[in-house]
Image 1 (cartoon, rainbow, N blue to C red):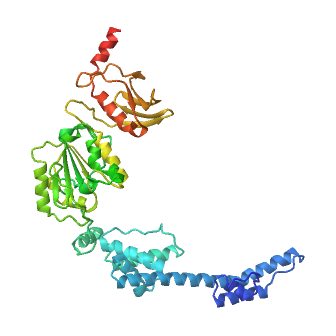
Image 2: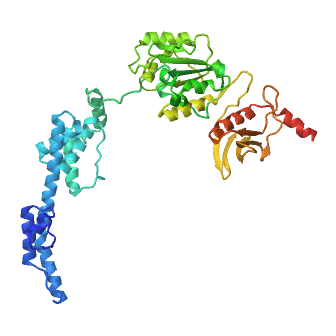
Image 3: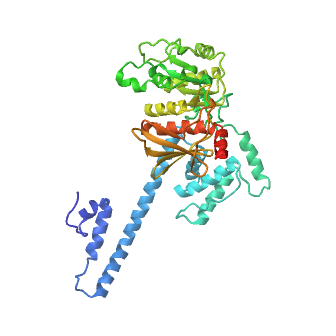
Length: 439
């Protein structure tokens, strides 16, 4: 109930503001006994009346504070008792209850008792936790800590007390459970592999391996064609040379042996032993340097279980997160592949944006988005040194590399710039040197 007309002498005013009936009546009585004087009364009289009312209400507010503190401590102890009944407390929590029951401590003092008891119990040296704020006098808190330290087995008069308690704590069963140690395996599990990026070294298509899910292959619906990972792979020139393995309900199979079937959303029924044998047979005789795992969820857990069948190689990565990000990771991984008649430079490409557009740097070369190309598309220009166009560089086949490259859309800028930088990084500068000498 809210009283619109604030009347400090009416108990209902204080009841509407959360006070108990006893508190509301006491506050209202103090205002009735010491009401405000008229505004035209002498200032000294009005001040004296206010001081008298403050003095009258001081015991009321002190009683409120004591009651609130008692309720806080009761709630805290009740919560801890309930946790103890459910077996969810530790040794220090039990020491708090012991300090209350055995010594009659309130909540704050019982906590200092528990600090002392636990320090002695686990072999720590005696040290007062004076930095914890509290209204309890310092000497009372320290006395409770000393009592807990003694009850926990500590003896401050013994020179070797800390060493003795430490040895006892180590021998005590279930005292301090050791932290769980990480499982050490002979190889990192596929689920822990990083996502593809620019840092890894490019690899020839013939030395690359990708493992797909049948859910990402042969999506016949036209609206799902853009999510067909196999189609994205086959769009890359030379990618048919790499090993492509597909996981279906029948297990792992190379793309040549994979038979599309109606999608069943049930869990893969293949056993771990059969899956491992299928993987080994699929990659037998291949020299693999770069692996990408495009599996998620239960499929990835299955691969973790048979990770011993995978080759240990230089670069091991996997796609993750949303379908859109998985497709972006796949394309980033495909960008690092090249054929047997090509050379691709390794290293991390440093990306940046200037006022005029995207830039990428690899070694001494810088690729920049110049803007719209003559006709259609977007123009990329490669520079070397002090903003000098990278002319006179030849690839592995002896053909001169153009320093201007036209890209059909902005969506392909980054991938084309990366491929161009890696081609220039692996090119020979002999033609450039001879061209300058001839000039």
